[in-house]
Image (cartoon, rainbow over all chains, first blue to last red; front, top):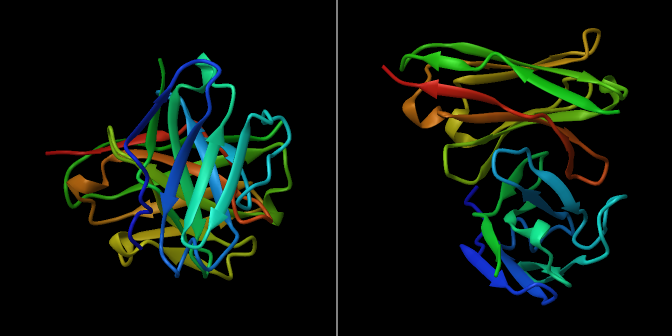
Length: 110
Length: 118
């Protein structure tokens, strides 16, 4: 049950695209197409942004997209906006109704 | 509108006990698995525990096994976390979260802060 590895910080200018990686193991990310991504603004609850590796829940902007290759999942934010400045966490199903979160990435809009 | 409202947090001495509650509304509570997720001050999210819709399946992260007990009352639309033998490292905001059929956590409460200190 070790945390998935994410970069501590990623930054970009408004309008640019950024990608956040999320590296796990063959027991979690690599075993299931059940990686989700959450955005968390300071002092707020997390919000689901991507489900099942690449699916956007209703209401989430199409600027957010997800993918996975092997044991690494990725979140891409295109057309970066000021409101995207937040912490982002990946999460993988790890079997038997257990989950493991990533270490978190602080996104800064320059 | 889906709402999850946690309560019961506070200041507890090491070794003490506390029960957190999560009141659910706006959806058929008895149809969903529910989870507790915590976040230590300035740290990342950590999954803590899950309980299936009918309480048949219950799981915990290793660090709380034997100390925490998750439960639910579907008649009261409520989720609980009984925490015993509390340690300083249990200090965190505790969120309850609904688990969707896609194995993600699609609805979250606002969280309740638990502080363990003497």
